[in-house]
Length: 233
Image 1 (cartoon, rainbow, N blue to C red):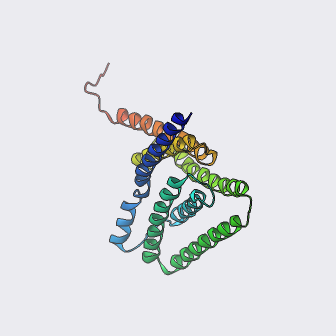
Image 2 (image 1 turned 45 degrees about the vertical axis):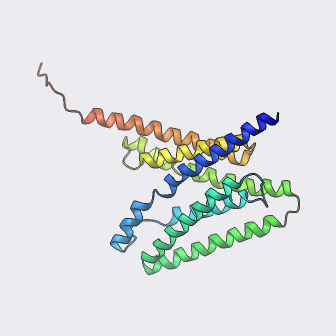
Image 3 (image 1 turned 135 degrees about the horizontal axis):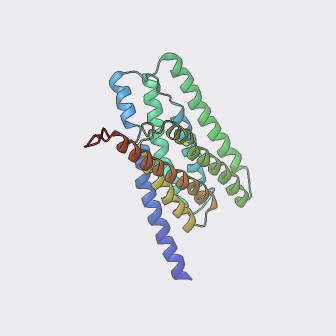
């Protein structure tokens, strides 16, 4: 039994490390967008809302991973700490180069996000029962993750409707899938429903994106091929 526990612990840590590596693919995916923003010194038509929401998601999951909420979830805390830093940098860059009206709006949303996070932290600490506290914050983090993983459904619908993968970057979809499956396994080996359930959904949605990408890429290649022999019969 002790040996089995040690094996599970090693597998959990390996899955967590893999999850960190693949998470960087997600965190670095907006770099091209912000290179363009910095180069042109304008945010053009880009929206900051995805980064605002991603920051909130990272903060809630970070809080869930702390020892005050759920012991043995250090890697959930660290990966979301890194993610929160990335999102905050992107938001500050957006605010720097945005028009005055957008600056004020984004600053207001950013303050609102931090305000909500403080309410969640203080509110959860008022719950003396550690098991109940973990369940409350776990449900919040689970709901936040599921809604984040569900956001590409619009893109999936667009791909099916247009039969084009133009708006679904392959490496972003691949990073989402690999990170999700890594933390699904991490949660499974850690016996944590609030980690493996949302990441299981993320794995499923990520695999759907990859299947669609492969299918419609193949269709597009076949349609673009010119016939070598043209028959006039």
